[in-house]
Image (tube, rainbow, N blue to C red; front, side, top):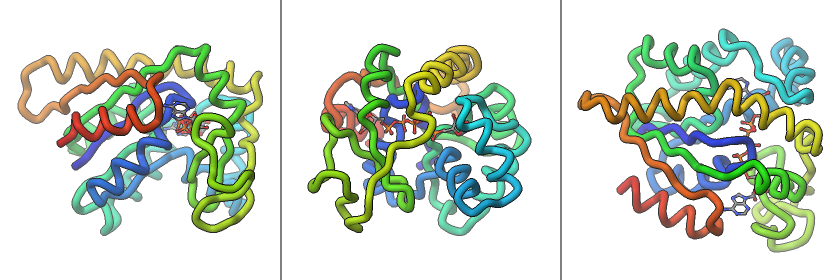
Length: 217
Ligand code: AP5
């Protein structure tokens, strides 16, 4: 199983990725998590990426493509993987095609911008694992701490309202075009093209999960 979760920032890609990866025993490849790990480790990539991420922009395609190619060559990707937050531009999608990476499903999680702003203000994350909560819609068992480790949850720097608006603009300018790119590919009749699935992401977390899993099995 190789799939792409496509959607605006805050659409619920990370939340749903956990369920899909558990169900199909595949790794979640989140370019956002990889970049945040590099920022935390203070690597040259992390130093370059931090300012871009904090401002809500996109990290350069060549850097991201290199990171992903290295990651999918690792042994745990032999039976598939889930891309979360990648590809995010046409050049990133074309680089995967050029590298011969075939995808089974592209799943678009569709949520309008108004709902995104509300979601981001209440998001809390466990940095080490990437687990994501929401103070109202998906709360942890105990306030402010991760369910599995008991460690503190934080609010991401780029979840401030102004940065979220910028990230949404960037999504509409550079990433949303992938909806047309993949849905046209799916409709083209080529047997190796990915199937395209669109899900209403305004449903509850559990309802999105059930619709998504049902579409994949
Ligand atoms: P990244 O980490 O990928 O951020 P993103 O795409 O903006 O996505 P998010 O993680 O913000 O949202 P999500 O869709 O995973 O939503 P979540 O499940 O958390 O990227 C960060 C930055 O890194 C980028 O801005 C860019 O700078 C850089 N970057 C990353 N990849 C890149 C690439 N390929 N190329 C270039 N640059 C790249 O849910 C959000 C909230 O809503 C949570 O609180 C959750 O609990 C809640 N929620 C989820 N589902 C529901 C529901 N159904 N109902 C109610 N609440 C819900």
